Amino acid sequence: MTVQQRLVFADPGEAAGLAAFLGRLLRWEKNAAVRIQAGGGVAGIFAKPARFEVLAVRTGRLLEPLELDVTVSAGELLEGIEEEKESVRIPGPVTGPPWAGVLPPRGGWQAFAELPPDSVRTVAVAAVGEFRERAEKLNERARTRETLDALADEIWSRPLGRTGLPLRAVHAAHALGFLRGKEPVVLLRAGAWLRLRTTDGSVAVRAAGKGAGLSVTPV
Image (cartoon, rainbow, N blue to C red; front, top):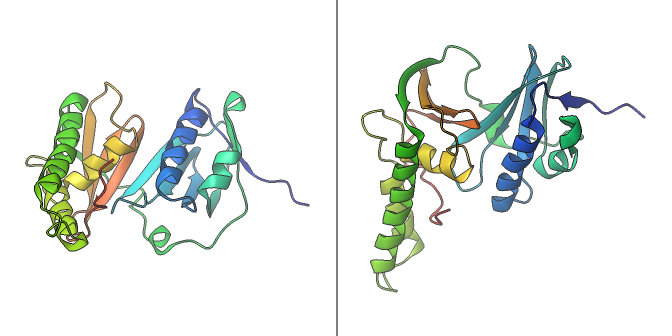
């Protein structure tokens, strides 16, 4: 029997943060998968939350160097976390979903804006509130899946101010708990990708992607 690989984090609280991230993913999709890439003393855990047309990622510095690129079950990864040891056991690989083959670039990111976290949270909450209010005003016959999907796409496709970042990325960051800190929210771009980064994680989306929308169920 081979010894299972482990990620051992260098900073306190990283294992707990990863556990919280995976727990939120599993709320929306019990069979969620994540792709893990580790190298250069850093590990990145990538996911596509089931209700969001974005990619989310948590990164952490590693205490023990490891070269790894594997797609695994999010639930099994969560079960392997030992918070007191700041480590996580890597489960066996699974067949990766299509999104796992197209990740944001590792390098080349350029910051173009910094925003107060309170203002970004306010935008996210307001957008969810607008969706609910407008959906509730529809009469029962008009409240079809098609109508609600169109309403969701209208709201989540709007840009965040003049940044060009679609609100679907802000909504996802809020739902994943990435907007809880006090440090500035940093916006970056690299090629066709835009990225919202906080100390708790990042959300990336293709700048040219349109029409995908989010689930019609607010979080």
